[in-house]
Image (cartoon, rainbow, N blue to C red; front, side):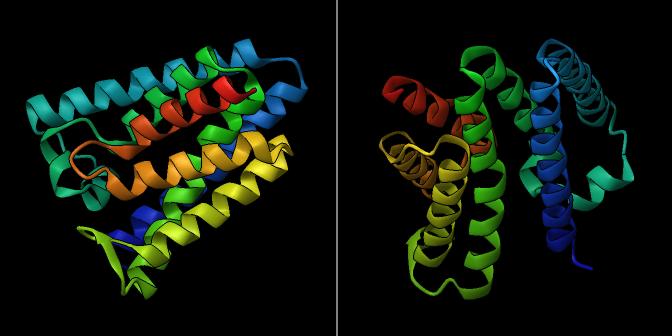
Length: 187
């Protein structure tokens, strides 16, 4: 299995576990507990990143799946966790969950479709096919969680544009926060 495919499988598993866990905690009136768990996970990821970067500590799963730029920088999973924690603290739960889901699942859809079928490049390695896949997934998630196209369509468009045109910064950090902000403004 290639490191790219392993990374995407981990991403799908982490995404599903995150969204299902958040839904479970929300429906059981335990969001404060969920936020505490996420903060503890964030602390663990930050400690791992510190050890990786400062002391060249190699964790097999991290080393096997990291992008080149992550070798000496904060890992994508840490940045994703930061974005999830901030989104849950800043936005109402339905907006936060939608923005988080768009980031997690839309990114995977864009990557897999873009890598497999992307022939029309729109920005560096990003393709129109991958961006269209992201937009469709984001709209489906928005419909499922919000049911209001006046809110979820602009959120989906925002998420898609950020994913397509972000290359130096980790889009998993920026995307849910900016997308959530758009949803909050429109709700």
